[in-house]
Length: 574
Image (cartoon, rainbow, N blue to C red; front, side, top):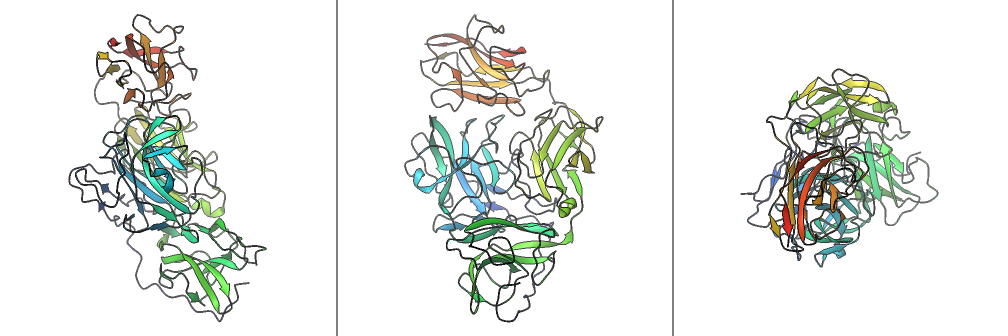
């Protein structure tokens, strides 16, 4: 039974044809004149539409003039050149400092940053608005990733990036998980300043997650692709419901209007088409062909522009309580395929994987995943990632997307981790152990030049308590390992499997069992605010020391090791 109302009104036809799915999104800039584009080869954002030819948005920062859109806050110990901004909506809208920016409950957003003095463990985070006023943030951020887009540590310093917070993709859970509850927030670049304390290098304008709001998980879908709708309802009752309408029928300013037209699809706020025992104040539901939901139409929706509405049943019609951003449905059906962006890659170069999975329509592909296989071995993948781009996925499938395999962002796991060894591979879209689709072969080239492993310090003599800069390279004669680590020993005390170092950390700068993918090269700062997680003495006492780059033999911490890759010249602490 549909909600009671006056006689049905036919849905309004969409007079504007859908945008060409091959069209590139708008390029946004902050009057950029000098600083590099935030979109780098190490942080390519997958397109939100199913079209693999779509070009990611490029955002550039002007390092000479801080734009009003970011209004950076420079605290004590902060960085006046660091910038961060939020981009949201299908038109890639920048959050504006001059007005309150409202984001719907469940609506994802992109975070772009530029951090020219970045450190290995700098954090991109969402924090409450009130906790940012002093320039110092204490506690665990609400949502966060390291600057490389991962919570597992970074292989090197990322001075710029473009990451998406939302359903699927990055695992950004902190003291809360996605979606954010209604409230006021900022995104910020954070740097560790002590135990559970961070300097706020810069922050965005405040944004508010609407108390009564509704959103969809994407801005473009293929015909038959499931639509994920999330809502928050400040004053809920059993007669509230959500519906899908043509976008031209109600615009973004339609809150408070009373309408009488019937929806294309609908359900009450409890997810059923019968009255709820009580209204739901927030929920996430799926509209799709295996969901027993109808309206004026049966699934699927035709190509066109649409909106999701949150409504309350009234005696004279339906009161609009919230309106989503418009979303588009392309006029074509999904096909099951998987492909990569090109056939030859340099060593450690990002690999973009694009896929569509029509099998999701049967409801059996919630467990689908992407595997990377050696050309000579069809049975044992060397690397895998879930189709949502994260280690764990929501309880609804991802039918189409594009993920970046590389040193940051998507978390790859299995027998090998990033980077892939030189050789020939292919990628496959998997359902349990069945290959639904495979790509053409791709080749990872050997590292171009012969490089010896090395580790150096930035000075030969330091004052007590002075920061010590370390940099290292894993040479071409060995593969970077997740078990590699960096250690400092007193001069004359050689690593031998028994002698313990004065202090040590994994190559990603964390005290963890392993660093996903290891690291080809990196820079580190050992000091009171260096951002490293170190086990051992800090600061170093007066004496003479040597830094070592080690290859681990197990997840056990030092002194266990496989071999010494490199050692630095001796340095002294006065």
